[in-house]
Length: 101
Image (cartoon, rainbow, N blue to C red):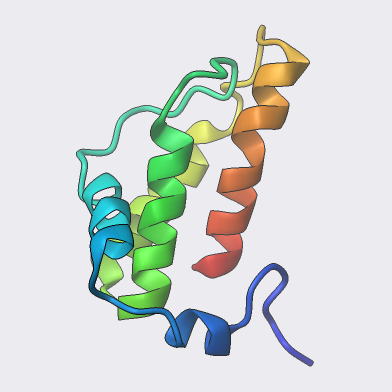
C-alpha cells in the first residue's frame, strides 16, 4: 500500500529543481517562518509551509521538514474566532504539507 495521499513520490521526483517556477517556490520556502493564523484568510504562511514541504519532498533537506512540522504544529488552534472561509482557505495547504513530510 502506498503512503502518499495527494501526490506520489515518483511525481515529486520528476519535477525540476531549476527554472523560474522552482526559484519562486524556493524563495517562499526560504522566508523566515512566521506564526501561522488559520483565522486570517490572507495569512501567507500556509503557502510558505506548503512550499517548504515541496522543497523537502524534492530535495530531502531535513531543515525544510522540521520547519513544516513546526508550522503545522503551531497552526493548531489558531482557527479559533475566525470565519469558516478563512479556515477553509488556509487549512488545505497544511494538510498537503503534512502528507509530504
